[in-house]
Length: 124
Image (tube, rainbow, N blue to C red; front, side, top):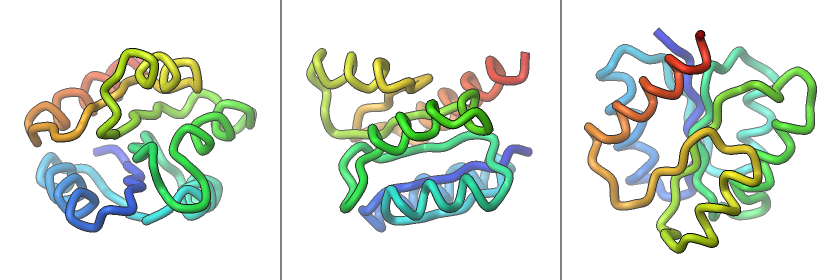
């Protein structure tokens, strides 16, 4: 069972993602903005962060960059969630340090599979 942080300002998506991850046996913490995501990662043990790119205050890209810049979180797996599907947006996400990039809308099954894959790679 992994501890997963879900950061998304859309309550419906946040709730759907949290529900699916809990169904898969994970412990889930939910927040609705980037600053809260950073605070949560610094205050508790998190095995993976799922970050929406567009959030108020601090974007998921900025959170990802901050996580990569700090020695204690530089290896934390990060998956970006976004409606942005242009090649440039995807390249920007990976350049920020993301381990995966999921485009909305996504199926709950796809989400679960990608989370499992990223966690498996992180635990090698």
